[in-house]
Amino acid sequence: MAGDDRAKWGVLTIICMAIFIMVIDTTIMNVSISALVVDLDTSVPEIQAVIAIYALVMASFMLIGGKLQDVMGRKKVFLVGLALYGVGTFTASISQDIITLLVGWSILEGLGAALMLPATTTFITATYEGAERAFAFGMWGGVGAAGMAFGPIIGGYLTAFYSWRWAFRLELVVVIVVLLFSYLLTEAKPTAAWRDLDIAGTLLSFGGLGSIVLGILIVRVPELWGAIPLIIGAGVLLLLVFYLRQRHRQERGEMPLTDVGLFKNRIFTAGNAVSIVLSITIAGFLFIIPIFLQSVTDIDAFSTGLTLLPMSIAVFVFSVMAARLSALAAPRTLIFLGFVVAILGSVMLRGIFSAAMAPGEIVLGSMIFGIGLGIVFSQVTNLTLSSASKEQESDASGILNTSKQMGTSLGTAIIGVVLLFSIISGLVTGIAGSTFGQGASEEQIADELMKWAEKMKRGETPPDIPEDRVSEADAIVDAAVSGAMRSSFDAISVILVLGLIAGLFIPSSAGREGKET
Image 1 (tube, one colour):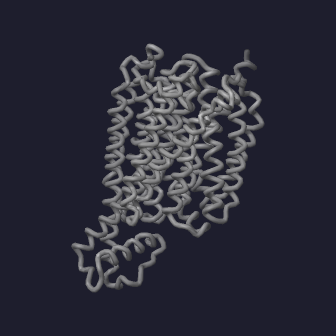
Image 2 (cartoon, rainbow, N blue to C red):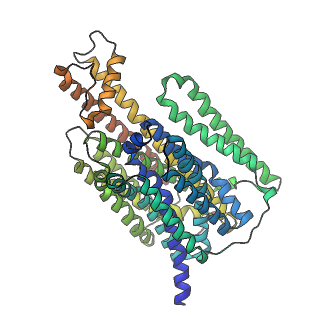
């Protein structure tokens, strides 16, 4: 029995290791943006795009990654994904330009993760039952949340004292360890053939999700604003066609890429909405905070990670601890409580950012923010997947993980765009009320001030700003950046409120009465 228990909990250990390296990919690099820009001779917007594309590739191929389990078996799919991920992380570690990083990190690792991630949840549902399953999903969510949160300190340490490349090299070591212990994983008998796969549906899904994220990303390019409604509209249309195609295939008795009938399940649909909100908020938070801390307060990547550590611990601890609270309170109640706490943390954070602030000033607010997110993380995965029938497990896993990754991609794009445009708006407003503007347009001076803002941590000043006006420029930039951070956290708070509302659609009895059909 002891040996069986070790093998059984060994499955969870392997899964958690795989989840951890997949999730930390994004957050490790968030604190290394400045180093990536210098080493690869690129720019912050290009790195932002690479981060968003990584999550987008995962989201776009997650559905077929889940469906391939029915064709190949979950263990084979997991191992193929693990191999792709290993090749990708090695390629990323030797990158000398942004294109190689894009191929290795965003594409190869993204594809590998799209195959691995759905299998991790079906391994859990196949291995554990009842309270053990709830604990396993609590750990799954907790490790995933911790990966997003602990990534900054790992990446910060490696970037500050060694190189960002070591982050990818250490991931490769974990890939090898997971491969060595993969014999503990159990295989599932294939239930479908290759000819049953819906390739057209995969392309529709990729095109729809990709168009929406692309439309948001190019908001930062004014010359392309006219195309944005068309691009996002095309994405929505493609997703609608995808939905109708899947429903049509089901009606004809053909195997759909995913069972869209799951969306008739109230718990499942609300749970996915909550998951999207969680991913948007934490991805947005972990994108803008490192940029602010390193660009404005002049701390290095490791110090940035240390500053975020209390939030990291809060997310992990409450993700694991709160999983046991479902015996005392309904999951909907805990999700509501978690969102309220996270909103409180976001509101606390919105007003503290300035050039003169100490990095430690964000600790209390970010801890409260992390506690709230941890409570929600602890409930939503088990609740959402447990609402699906056993026959729908792989489809439910694929949809949920697609939702999570789409949220991550959207979070980086949306909150990053809010920050950028709020800074520009603040600069123009500040210029309008200043002594600047003589002999130059507001746009020209705003451009100079943006350059000045980007160079703050190096103590450089654009030559077009007279020395006797540097203090005034400093004040304008400080006000613009502070206002932009307030706007960003206002956006995060609004998104959290939407998640709270989505959580209210979960029946109060959910999680206690079993599955809802």
